[in-house]
Image 1 (cartoon, helix red, strand yellow):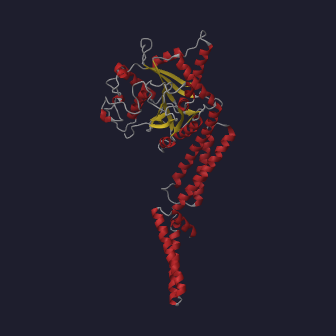
Image 2: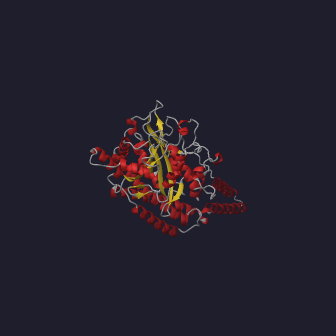
Image 3: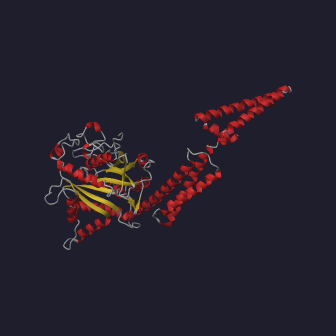
Amino acid sequence: MSVTAPVSIISPVAEEDGETQQSFEIYKDKLESILLDPKIADKQVCVVSVAGAFRTGKSFILNFFLRYLRWKTRASDDESETDWLQTNLINSNEGNNGQLKGFSWRGGDDRETSGILIWPEPFILQDKHGNEIVVILMDTQGIFDCVSTVQKLRHNICTFYNDFFYSCEFITLPKTIQEDHLQHLQLFAEYARLAMDEYQETKPFQTLMFLVRDWCFPYEAEYGINGGQRILDKRLETGAKQHKELQQLRLHIKSTFENIKCFLMPHPGLEVAISPDFRGELNTISADFKAQLHALVPHLFDRNNLVVKAINGQQITCRELSVYLNAYFEVFNGTELPEPKTILAATAEANNLAAVASAKAVYSKEMEEVCGGDTPFMSSAELNQHHERCRASALLSFNSAKKMGGPELTSQFREKLEEDIKSANEAFIRVNNSKNLFKSVKTPAVLVLFMVVCYIFQEFFQLLGLFMVASVFSLILTIVIALLVTWTYSRYSGHLRDAQKTIDTFV
């Protein structure tokens, strides 16, 4: 495998003091090179994200997800590779006890991850219906570190940005689920929910899993999903003796997420915690921790548990995810936390823009099949018929997409789609015309014909003794030869393109 490092799609920009971070930068070219790859652009996407406080092992656990996905999507069918945990496909020459590679991680007390990173290698899995789903792994900057104050936290794009785009989010928690964890979750989720409330017909967020690390009470609740669910049910339980505020908090969390789970993980081992030289070697990690990894990770990526990312109840593709990511970044990347209505407007605009992008992709794909670069020349009338058919398909795709913002906004973006289709059609017409043999040889044929005519007149007037007139035709012949040489050089070298265009226009 050639891919060995994650890609930063959003990173903090340091201020003049070199420490504070009030703004972020998005790398659109890197983001689009991954999500707009023709192999995955129009496939539905599942975004798996790990969030939580800093130094809670987010990148560490994410690398085990990465190891499993690489094993599951490997090209080899070697039956000896039956244990994904014992296989290191990122750097296989390090053997079964090799270092844990992938997202940058380390022990210690200082923050490691900044901004938002995604793994550039998309993994294609099948869901329970047999549909291909693209799985994207996302790592995010931890919160509550010694750099970000509470005020900065409220202005931090990573805090809220992640909430909008995961389809399955893990929140890493130490020891147990505490009341302050639920309160922090409500803070972020409530803000995002308010931003989507006007048009939201379903619960705004999809699957949330509390990943409780270093669980110390297996005698009360066993490690894994079953024990975790009992602890989660206990924490989210409401009763008449509870304070009203605590009841509202729990009811709100339940109404915000479609599916809430909890998984209890044991401590990975004393040597893992205290050794500065630990790099993820499996022989150092405790057997209990590895056993729970074997239970957690395959469960997460089981075909029955894959969750396609949905916005406003509509499942989206990688192409549409790219549109949403760019749109939300512009809203969040300011000095002040944006108003929910501002985010709502951005969501509606991004929603319509994503519908335009998908519809335009439908038009381009269908047109490429009938008049792409490898297809033969067709008449203008036939090309126009295909254009109208593909245009109708694109408009149908746009009209059938679930959109936000009302009829007026939809109308604006339908006009934009029409303009984009018109521009694309003009490009297809130019490509088709370039395949016309007679049009491609029109300029040199006319120039050669003109040369022949000039030569005949030159010789004719020389026979009559009218050398002055003959010299005029000789001069014209020389100019035409120079034009033909210039045109030929430009056509086959790619240089002097303006000169070629001028000669074509003249002819």
